[in-house]
Length: 179
Image 1: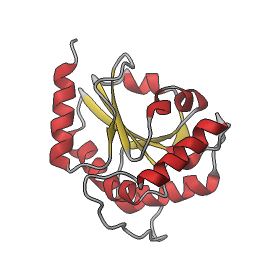
Image 2 (image 1 turned 90 degrees about the horizontal axis):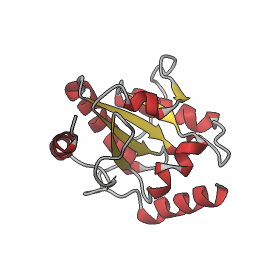
Image 3 (image 1 turned 90 degrees about the vertical axis):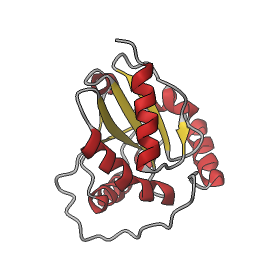
Image 4 (image 1 turned 180 degrees about the vertical axis):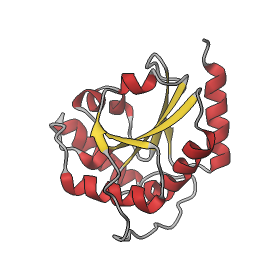
């Protein structure tokens, strides 16, 4: 597990937080209220079962492209969330190799979420998630889509996207699901 986490961190740093066109990082400002923001570990299957399609955005606090993309993803979640579709975030660097929460990183993630003014849910990765579908994540930000049964829909998307490109991806994957 520790080796997997170290490989991921090195790969993410080498990949430079992949993005279609690297945007400038937005500075963190510690003036935002974070008391209402919860980041917790949860069984994602219960989340997947809530909607026809769930977009899981995997990000880290040290990633400039993730910081850029957070408000874009938040806008998608608030404008296009429906009975068929939802977005959740996984804050990858918020746990140690044993899956234990890292309070400092959680605090940084909360400030980023508050600064971006996003309201979709964010979760800590469990050891099962790290050893499960996240083992295929090689760079951040990365995004995966799952149907209500927890089956991955399509390939992993690496890097940030514009809202228009995300809507194309979302609509394509919604069309791939048979219910």
